[in-house]
Image (cartoon, rainbow over all chains, first blue to last red):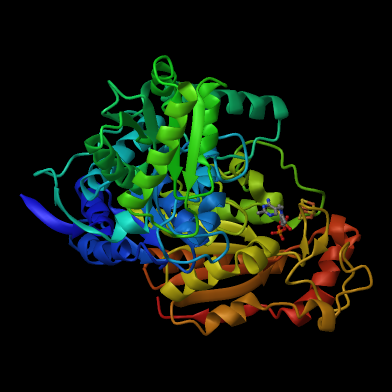
Length: 357
Length: 246
Ligand SMILES: Cc1ncc(C[n+]2csc(CCOP(=O)(O)OP(=O)(O)O)c2C)c(N)n1
Ligand code: SF4
């Protein structure tokens, strides 16, 4: 059955159906519908825990506690609040604890505004907090995908015992779309629960720590994490392509920007312009291969982001100097329309066709 | 022959790394003794701090998870809400709890979280080399208050128990010391009482423990113990600050 829901509420429902029993958060626009939904919903769940924390710092550390106690736990926020969560995210990565963190990005830096933006890409994909670690980052582009990826985020977090971030924006969080949920609640399958603290009954006591004073041991811990990240890079890349087969220009965009780009491409196709799209769904690990494969037959790439160009760097790294990169960015919470974007793409398209001749 | 004194079961057979005369080792032992006596080893989950006691998991033999500096109360909250049947306590210094972790502590107390905190007040930041703490006494010299703590510049020593006492969720607050045998006995009683409060679900419990740091006080262990009696406990009076029915 389809339900009409805001993206934020859909994450809440999907989380509960994925077996999430704990939510900790601090109010911030544009993600408030999520804690508000869960405040009600988790009260119906046996063992459900909802705390409006005193800060994002507290919230992420409550997540850490709930996670190490064996629960599926999540928190959500928007850009300024996510900055505060970075300390905890670094600890979750170091202590190898699963958790799901939602960032409904808004315009920044600083207080910025409450309009949709994509300016936290660096923070999300580069680790964000201190230390040599990575966070799996998923970028949905519809309410249905928000719901589906929430479930997947919890599974990924468990599989790799690592924090997973869902990177949306104010638009995705607040818009209403029809969404279907699984008909049954999923049971959590924890393959290795040997990190869970439950009291040392019938087994030796456990310690979960990230202080490793011996540099050699800390180095080994870093390499261990690194090997895990390599596995994730091999196995967990997700992307979608759109009208790429005959294209001579490939737009690369994620999340809301990809929706806008899709609209723009449809228009341009009607005008006969051969444009397709690669939409990264996992931002880390970044879909490097598909970009490299595409570069074998397409020269022109058009990166569109609601920022001054952050994913752009990953595209450059993927292309390793091959191809030509066009860029259009709208930071600060400005959301261009498909028509606006199609005009820009069209201009770049025609210029590069001319150049080729 | 009758054994009258032995290592508590909940205390690992490992030499402490603490300085001679440090209060942390006494406090660890007291906690371990109480855990044994109340048969709580299999139920206990401890959250050690960033501070000299960060390695508490090398000594106290219960499940442990390290919290980021100051976030002990938040981490303990997450654990306890998921596992209400467990005994959950954090162990925190005065920098950890009363500076960087003030908000977490205050709100955990106010929500009446069913956790226990052992708050080790040694009036300095021990681990980082003796800097001024929120509990440093007026006039007390530290590496960052070389001329002595000055109220106009540095504010006043914070009386954590008194502050938390006015909050609706706090059930048990007592200040003790570990500088002499009678005080140590009282400290042990307070630790047990705090656990009882948690088990009976009356609310948030915290035991503040005045604890010598001879290294950073630049005193001998004996002078440190005397200083707690003669100076420190004047600012931080010992005794029960709050004890709701339990
Ligand atoms: C975010 C952060 N800031 C600073 C530190 C450095 N640091 C480690 S312990 C500590 C304070 C220790 O003092 P206290 O809490 O009084 O405990 P003690 O060592 O005296 O037992 C500080 C500032 C840290 N680990 N993390
Ligand atoms: S520095 Fe102070 S608190 Fe730390 S171990 Fe030494 S005496 Fe104890």
